[in-house]
Length: 160
Image (cartoon, rainbow, N blue to C red; front, side, top):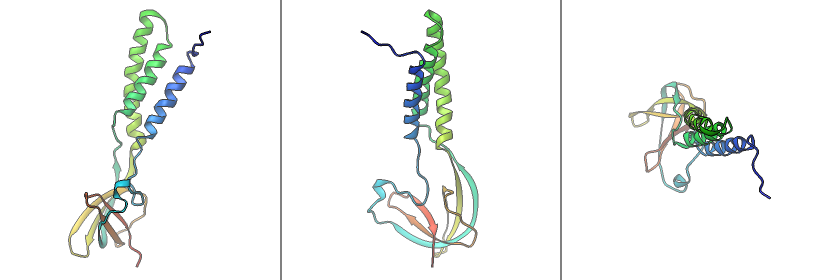
């Protein structure tokens, strides 16, 4: 006996798979999260003072996973409409629309609020660092600036 998926079950499965793909797109840009390759590596540590700061928007990623997942979901949903040539056209239109919506969804899910910090290091050098706005800062705050060997820099409060 051959069992067929109900037409409404296929879009639900595609949605579940698409959301799983998009969940893998999320990135950590905060001062408390480290990538595995930065663990157990020496980094340069400097101290300084926040001279100025402003809120910024950190754009989301466009890895293509949102488009692929959206295209699959849209294609499956379009395939449930009509029959014959109409069904083929609905599948194509659904796949294209799904790809566009998936791309926008991925960018929206991976975007985050950030902060641009202008820091006067104790050496006198002035630097700017953008990171996720997960830690409150104010002008005049003493900070620690940690820069890894590959140039990834993060700022955290300096508690003296």
